[in-house]
Amino acid sequence: MAEPFAFEIVSPERRLLAGEATEVVVPGGDGYFTVMAGHAPVMSTVKPGVVDVKMADGELRQFFVRGGFADVAPSGFTLLAEQAVALADLAAEDIEGHIRNAEEDLADADTDEKRDKARQTLSQLREVRDALAHMRR
Amino acid sequence: MASLKDMRNRIASTKATQKITKAMQMVAAAKLRRAQAAAEAARPYAEHMDKVLRSIAGGVAGLESAPPLLRGTGADRVHLLVVCTAERGLCGPFNSSIVRLAREHASRLMADGKAVKFLCVGRKGYEQLKRLYEQQIVEVIELRGVRTIGFAQARMVGDRIVEHFEKGAFDVCTLFFSRFKSVIAQIPTAQQIIPPVFEGADGNGASYEYEPEEEEILAELLPKNIQVQVFRALLENAASEQGARMSAMDNATRNAGEMIRKQTLTYNRTRQAMITKELIEIISGAEAL
Image (cartoon, rainbow over all chains, first blue to last red; front, side):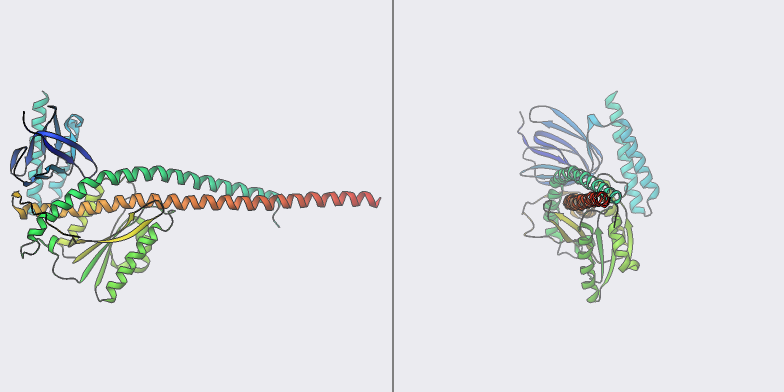
């Protein structure tokens, strides 16, 4: 049995989850990574995607996050998510909404830098949508 | 002199007003509870954000390469004052105390020969500021249709601020809002957000690995920090507004009660005086026969 560590997901509006987890998979800016107890302190950006949390009591919980930061410290792991929803509460239409928003962002972008960023977000969101569709089938 | 009917009408209208202020007070109390809960719920994120920013900023702040959002532009010439107020009045001195603080700040800066620009969030602040500084208001953001403040609004305001900053429209940005202390005390507050001011000791010494690079994280973190600061200000403001409205309406209800008491007394006196007068007329008429 893996060792538990303190884990939190907070969004600007509220704290979504606080408790003990044994394993958390995060969509980091440079790719998915897994955090377990005793992980080296890391600060990473988070791209849109799904966070898998294995709680200390064995329950598996999944959250959709859209952007934010992961702060892995010796005292615990805090995920600062700009937007976060429990996957179970997330309807397919919501993702479509996010994608539409991202498409608008792309259309509105006036600099190359912004356009790149918007395009990246859009493709990540599409990935998430496809992954979800796959999972539910 | 007013007739008895007029006086009855006046008492009725005072009573109606009292009912309205009473209802507003109760609505404000309910909204205040919700606003306080929202402010409470937002705290963990803001605190953690602050911690993260401090630990990164501590290492980069002194460097030439530090992003301007952290370091400032190096100049101190043009100031942007972001004045957050409410959309509605009838909340005692809430709006005007924020505006007064911003105005004092502005006149001090202008006396020092600095240029001042305003960005108003909320209609009430704009209405008060435009009388004095119409030319200097660069933007007005109204949150009129918004029932509860969400992060989306804060993000919009934050993005606008950063956009102005990137265009080089100002050097220093200060946020004005009212800090919620209790129902009877709201403290108008000024907080400098660009470049950020860190209070107390920074850097907790934990050595992090950064992924991607520190600079890249900072580039994302700094604009977000501004959004978070704006969000916190808006939430504090929302709670303060309801608190101020609650005590203002409580006063109004009490004043209306006092007024009703006085009016009823005058009404009763006048009525009695008329009865007495009629009696005298009847009796002296009978005696004359």
